Image 1 (cartoon, rainbow, N blue to C red):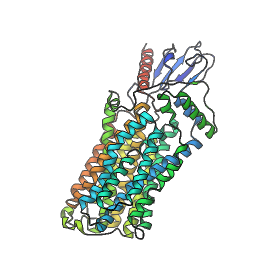
Image 2: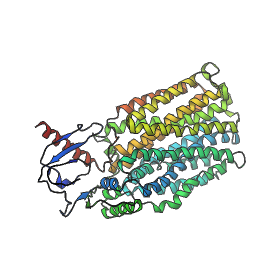
Image 3: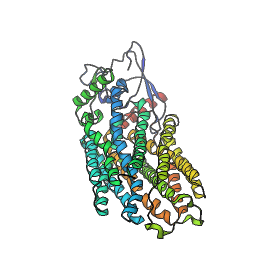
Image 4: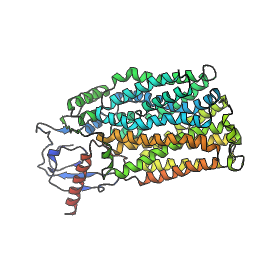
Length: 533
């Protein structure tokens, strides 16, 4: 805030010193009323207004948000990007391996289609159970603790999966891998809490590029390993990014936002000072405001009046995103294996008696899989531009509607080249939409419930991913038309749900507590009343 002789103007920030509320004795105005997408309240102070002071009256005060804005984006955030990005690469590789492992075990262990689908679903079952648990752990004991434990867990059981002697063992071990992967979305929560507002959108979207790198790397690794070394080596080598993360995780500091809510102000200040030093900047002058919140990580806080609608809509959007994304990934290998015969016959039915026929993925299948995996990069570029131009809500809706549009040509009899192109486009849009919801969710919820919101939302997405193998791998063998209709209908509904979200987070700072919203509401009401009088 600028201090000068005469009148001055300042804009309300979210974290304001409770002891100083109501000190401004002059008029003001609000650009928008409470509950709209973006709210900015400007107040003109009287000439006698004194500089703001800390709780002890000795100097100015600032918040974590203020400090991060002053420190800016620099070397520290780049290091965080690379390290948290490794967790995303590992997660993507463990997910991508599901579409590669199925056909191989179908041949080697003579598995019927329902057992292949069960092997995929057990991973998502583990993720669905664990996601809220990891979120609760993150809100209660810290982001770094939660993320480190889940990566160590996943690394351990990922390596053990490579030595599974039979189908039953592999099923259990992959479910335990899924249990660990349920905590991976907390890396977005963790990373977002170190970012200044202006850099948050582009930074989180760029983190998503690590997921795309992981999917491409897994296909390339499979192309090299599967013909010679086999699927066990592929499982073992796919844990390499998580092993690197575990080696360097001790460098990670705890989130200063979490420390503030935990009452550890001095540690938060120390973390921010270290970040400023690494970025070559300075901390803001004054004393940092600390607000201790003991009741953190409660699911019931997601259903307060101000967040109930947002929570329910987001849960369905996460469900639809995962259902559609993993559906198109699994459909890719199924359709490529069937070749040009898809859509050639009325009803596009696949003879159920063929469910035990053995057909390995060929080099051509891997190359086409690589092309469709590369689709995530242009999808990210499009959504990166969209989230900053038209906002988060409209970007999600756009991705869902375009995904549905790209699915429609698959109803017709099309060749392999056309099939690859439309799957490429469909995957580009749904991958972009998936990353927008990863950006929106930590922005819309306060620090006290941000991790549990991510955890429960991730659990809903895992529910969608758990169901989708039985649609993409089992229902497809009965009717391709019905399968595609399910995916189209689900994505269209999710597009409308995105538009119904009550809050647009473009240009909105991260909230630390639900009390911030109340404070903003009081400030808005006061300013509006002053303007009317």
